Image (cartoon, rainbow, N blue to C red; front, side):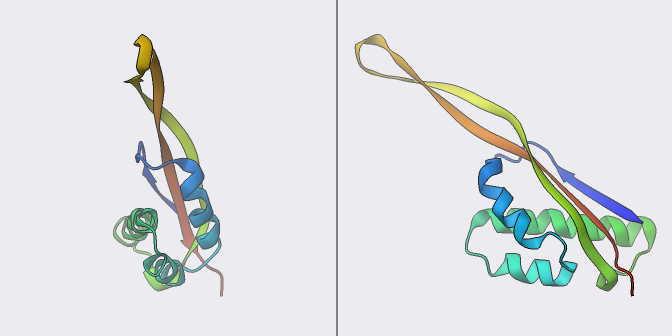
Length: 112
């Protein structure tokens, strides 16, 4: 059975979170959380929080054992950017785009 957890409009750019998602895709949950714990970036802490949420959903809603769970799918989609403008010289303005993302983690029981 697949169980899902989603974080929307995270405030993290998708391009900076995707390498972390690739690192934990297909791994057992406890192994993935260990990897994320010792990765030196604040984005890893946020991703670990979403993985823990998916594990909690599986444990509480479907009575699955957390030790048997594996990350089957994890993907990071681009969310709408927050757009601001910065004043520049001679009456001009430069855009500032604060990128965001939607992160989805799907865990399932591993066979065997």
